[in-house]
Image 1 (cartoon, rainbow, N blue to C red):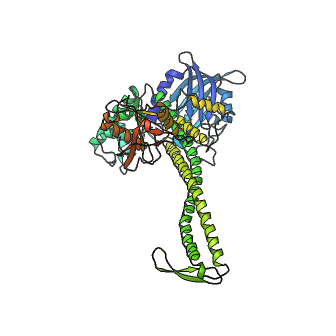
Image 2 (image 1 turned 90 degrees about the vertical axis):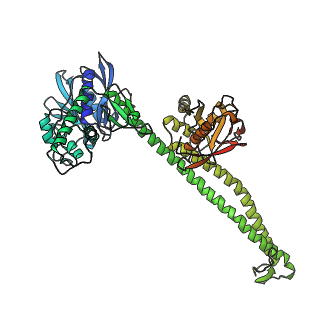
Image 3 (image 1 turned 45 degrees about the vertical axis):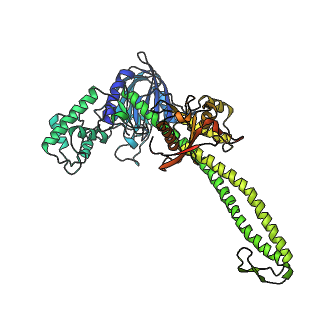
Length: 578
């Protein structure tokens, strides 16, 4: 989501107490549209101020994350280093609830004269910008230049005067209740939500919906409300904004998968309380939200890249499977040739070269059949040719049967790797999957130094506890599956796996108890986890095999995660529940 004016106001108020009188030590540019000012304050120590003009992540906030920077700094980064290194931040302010923040610096020019510079951060989605001006408002440069060809309304180029973005909205904090009521009553042909966001500054759609919810007004109601309702909305809005500004309670709202989807300076009643994470400051909230968002973006890139590589390998394997399966069809053809050769051999005494066909009885059904002959060959030569062809088909079929089994085993391994990739939670999971693929020969092995670093940061299996207190571990990839089954498990622990489907190994730790002594609910819970973390998770009822660990073996020289087992039970569970 885009940072709204209300949350920005709370963030800037926090920044005033943190960065004013702080000195710029370094200017960094980890991304094309992102600037990080490393500051030092006698009161706060070292701080990092992140200023982003990225369309999706435009914001200004303090970050605790040291971001990786390019080897060669961009030109705008070098420009800012020239003007701001050693400068002191004297003031930071926001105009009303408008999403424009001005940071004022006290710096020195080439002649060591004291000068004033201003960094103007415009947080406006795809039109976001970071502009450096002198004390007279002349633009020195900007992170995104805007010529007259791009915008005839507002040119942003070096040496041009800076003009504020066009602003037609009203500041709801500065309005009296009477003025606020008038503002909410100006339009009559739109929904009330649109009316609020179109005439008032700093209020996002989510905030408008929250205010209407607290006021007890339908969010899809028309703006032509009764005067009493408009008064109630205005009073609720003033109360809400005052409370948010004076008593911020920053929080991030999470979805059912624990991923951040929304942030606000106070908790919103329109979002569930149980899926909410609170923060002490708005800056910490924004730092968490944008860092997590960037982490998820990088993870998705890694997942897409790895899934593409696995997909290419799968396509090759599936092509071989089709070839080998086609060769199995030759066995049926060989059977037809066998009968034809046998008919010719059995009737050699009455056949001569030059005959086109002959009649005989089918030795299985007794029915008359007609056998075609090659007039250019003797019957003996035709029979010999057919027997050689039959032998060739059978040799190829026997050889391809082994290759088909190997290819199907490869397919299972790659489908499992693809499943684990699609469900990876972090970069460590991806590194584990890459390691398994490299070990199996599908990817190049990482350099020695990188391999050692990955070994130190190996991901861990998921951990669950049943209602009766039994620990359950679930592997997230083939490496973890091997560790769970072949290293961690005791011989009496119970091992689960979705039947004949790529998926996680699940280990129920029994502490030496017999299988019959484990309650059924725990067994079903563990089996459900095995189904949920397999490729059958959306398939409804899924068969899950389970047995004691002592019945599970790893074949010699087998691929990561590959095991065989016997003496097992099967339970059917619904993968969509846990």
